[in-house]
Image (cartoon, rainbow, N blue to C red):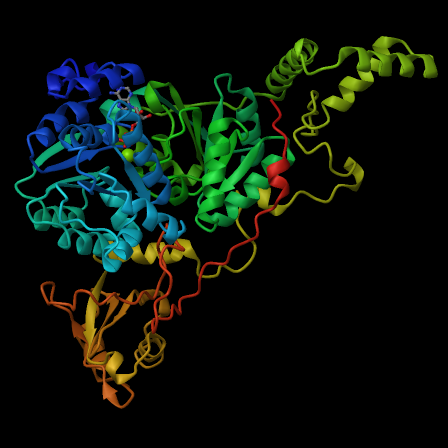
Length: 629
Ligand code: ADP
Ligand code: MG
C-alpha cells in the first residue's frame, strides 16, 4: 500500500486527517497502520459524512478498514441493537471482517460484532443476536433466514455494506442481496465494494444507493506493485516436478497457495505434495466449511505450508505468511489472476507470484501482463544441483538446530548411538552417516539425473515402482468422464450473471402441482434444451420462472411456449425486468451454488432436487502429515 504509487489519488497524510475519533486513532497506532491506503483515504471521510459509496478496488487494498473504521466512528455503543450490517459472500470472509471490526474496536467498551453464517448452530446464533450486537457481518442466506424469522431486526440499521459485490454476483447471491436491501430502512447509508464493476453490480448500485460517490483505485498501483511476478514456460519437465523444484529453491518461501482449476486437482496435487514430504492440503468448495476453516487456520499457524486451492475456495483469504502464489493452472481470466495473486503480499509484506504457462497459453500471459500493467518475467527452473545444494544446507541446519533443541534428551540418544557403535564395531561417523541417510528419506539430498530423489522416497524401490501416472505429464487431468460438478454449476450461474441466461415466465406454478423436475424434463425432452442451459427454477403459486439462454430464436421460443405439462401449455415468455415477483416467497433453487452451503435447510414443501455436490471424505492422515522444513 504505497502511497507514492498512486499519484492520482492524493491521500491524506494520516488517519487523523480523515476525521476519525481519538480512540480509533490510538488503536490504529497499536495495530501498526501508519497511513491510510488510497481506498481508505478516499472512502473514510465520505462514509463519516454519511454519503453512499461505490468503491472499486482490488483485493489487498484495505477495503475492510475503509468501511469498518467509519462504521465504528458513527456507532452508538449505548444502543444494543444492529446499527450496521456487512454482507460478505462467504463464511470465511464474514469471520475475517468480524475479526477486523473487533480489532479496530479494541478500545470501544460495550461494542459487539457478530458474524452470522450458515452451518453455525441457530440456537447459538439466536442467543448471540439477543445480546444486541451493534454490527452484524453475515452471509446473505443466513441473514435472510434471521430476517424471515424475525430474529434479526434491522429497523435501527444506519449503514449497510456489501463487501465483494462481484463475488456475490458470481456466486449467484445477488437476488438475495437485493432482497435484503429491500428489507432494510430506506434512509440507511449504503457502501458497495467490489474488485471489479460488472454492469450487474452497477445496476444494484443504481437501484439501492443514493447518489453514491464513486471511488476507483486502480489495481496496478496498489496490490501488484508489492508482488514480483514471474512465469515458467512449461516444457521438458512436468508441472509437478517443476513445482517441487520451485518450492524447494525459493529462498523467501514461507507459505504458498497453489491454484489449480478443478476440485479434483486440488486433492490430487495436495496428496502428491504431501507424499513428497510437504505439509500440504487441499482447499475446495466440496469440503465442509469446518474443514476449510481448519485448513486456513493450519496455514496461518504454520501447521501447513502449502494449500492447493481453486479460485472460488481461496477468494478473500488473508493469511499474511503466504509468501508465494503459484498459478499451477493458468487462470481463465485476468480478473481471476489478480484475485489469486492478491492472496500474497498481504499486510504490507512482499509477495511472489509464479505462473505456469503452457506454450499454447502464451496469449493469456500477454493479456495478464497488459491487465496488470507490469511485465511478468520468465524464469528458468532451478537445476537438480541447485535443489540438492539447498536441501543439504537445510538438512545441516536441521541437525544443528536439533542439538540446540531443549526437547532433545541428548544423553539418551547418545546412549543409543554408543550402543550401536559398541554392538556393531562401528565408528560414530558411520552411525551418523546411516542416521543422516534415514533422516533424509522423505526428501532425498541427492537427486539423480533420472529424477530419482524428486520422488517419494517412502514408496516402493525403483525397480518395483509403477509407471509414472499419466496425470503427471498432462497437468493433472482426470481420466474419468467429467460429471457435472460445482464448477459447472458455477459456470452456469456466471452465464446468467453475464447476461447469457435470462429469466422466463411459465404459466404453471405450485398450485398446478408442477415440480421443477417436470419443468426441466419438459424443456429437455420436448424442447430439446440441454440441461446445462437450464438455470435456476423458482416456483410461485400460480406461475414459475426459469433461467434459459437469453438469445433463443423466436421459433424455438414459440415451440417452448406450446409445450404442455399437466395438460397446461407452458406459455413460456421472457420475464420483463420490472415484472413484480411475490416477494416473501422464497424461490426454489434448482442449483445450489452457495459457497456457504449447508446454510439453508430445505424448507417444507421445497425439496432440493439438484444433485448436491459429492463430498469426499477427507483423509484423516492429512492431519498427521509432518511438516518438513
Ligand atoms: P481487501 O479487503 O481490499 O482485500 P483487506 O481489508 O483485507 O483488503 O486488507 C489487506 C491487508 O492490509 C490486511 O492484512 C490489513 O490488515 C492490511 N491493512 C489494511 N489497511 C492498512 C493500512 N492502512 N496500513 C497497513 N496495513 C493495512
Ligand atoms: Mg476484503
